[in-house]
Length: 160
Image (cartoon, rainbow, N blue to C red):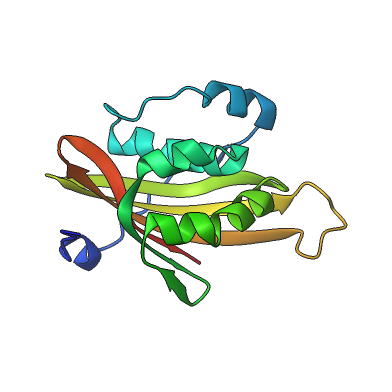
């Protein structure tokens, strides 16, 4: 993976003054809208949104299209070092968890620098079942994207 550490050294620049918006207002409508999506000509902004929607709707084929084969995913103090490892371990659990939540983006900044881009997102998760163990939490996500052979792919994910 030709991951440039330049993107890791950049200062965060959260979007200010934007109103929070819900990512998954209607899960059924979102699942249908993202059923036959082509990622070939997507911008980094579109790719980030597509990853979020694919996770929220359980579209594993689409998740696998937006993540690079050699993606590195940091989550909960652990690392998965490939798409195959993520698909065989935590992808199903992430999908199951997000299917029980309403996700609202609180802040998001996406910056493109040549063939590299980063996205920093803060979200609020609220359990659809108010009797759930965790009813509400704020999460942080950093994505690093790289244009590989003319197509944007996510090469690094950090969720906390």
